[in-house]
Figure 1 (cartoon, one colour):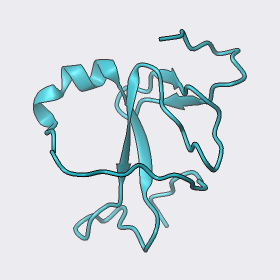
Figure 2 (cartoon, rainbow, N blue to C red):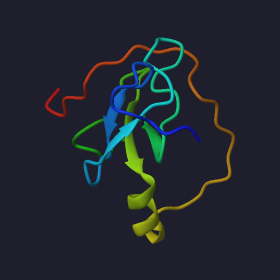
Figure 3 (cartoon, rainbow, N blue to C red):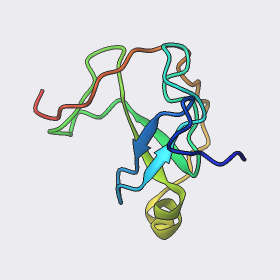
Figure 4 (spheres, helix red, strand yellow):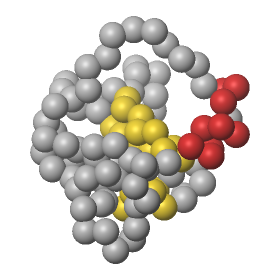
Length: 101
């Protein structure tokens, strides 16, 4: 895996949701690529749920967050693996998440 560098113009800097560690994507943001993939972390997508007081999607949208591999390993007992079909979105636009909206 190539090493992501801060001065790499093909990367987008993102932060781990848990610890704040800086991570980099494998490609720049585009409508076709979204965050693409990230080095040393996992990108999570969520459509929220009815019980959340922070986020529940309103048709055709979701939120994304990244958790670094180190945080995933440290908290692996809190994570479950689900065996079900999943299709990654092919094109999207994004904006910063504001939980007050």
